[in-house]
Structures are given as structure tokens and as C-alpha cells.
Amino acid sequence: MIYQEANRLGDVLKFEIDKNYCREVVTVASGHNLKIGTVVGIKSENGEAKIVSIADDETDGSDKAFGVLLDNIDASAESKKALVLARGGIVASSSLVFPEGATSEQIAKLTSDLDARGIIVRQSA
Image (cartoon, rainbow, N blue to C red; front, top):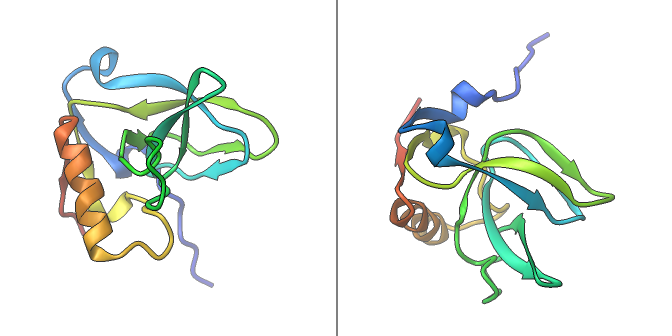
């Protein structure tokens, strides 16, 4: 039997300038069950900014990468707080979770969005 261990913070986050600068506590919108390393967007919901899965066909902010989730979070039933790398860090490409079915062009765009926020995606094994 082969056991594959789930990603941990060290698998995703390779470097950050300072955790007090790079990380943000955010609210994950209800209806989302997200894994560590998920590239997330942010949109306004009832006047409050909330983290959501990337939705390429939207224009409400959820089509643009805001950051990378730093822990598993199950907000299926209700909104929950989570930690996101929002700026100034390096993440491992092999540990990032993009939307299912994302094309190489979409992944390149999201990677560019992260780069614009100071999050560098490095190739990894």
C-alpha cells in the first residue's frame, strides 16, 4: 500500500519576507472546501470581501488571483476565517491548486496575477 501525504505549509510556502507583512487573515465564503495551496480570488459579498475559488468566467474579482491559501479550510456550511499569502513570498509550483480543468493559458494568467502581488511561483519537483 502506498500512502501519499497531504501538502503542508512547507510544501507550499518556500519563502516570505515577513509573516506580518505577507499573510492576511481573510474570510472564506460559505460553500467552499479548499485545500492548502489553492490559488484564490476575492470578491465582495454583501459589502464584505470574501475569498472564493477562482472563476475564470466572472468579472467580480473571483477571476483574478488574490493569493494562496496557507491551510486547508472547509467552509462548506458557513463562512470561516483562513490565512492567505497575499504578498511578498515564494511558492512551489507543484503544490499550487488551480481550478479544475484550468488551461495552461489560464494558469499563466493566474501566475501573472500572483506575480503582480509580489508572489513568485518557482518551478519545483
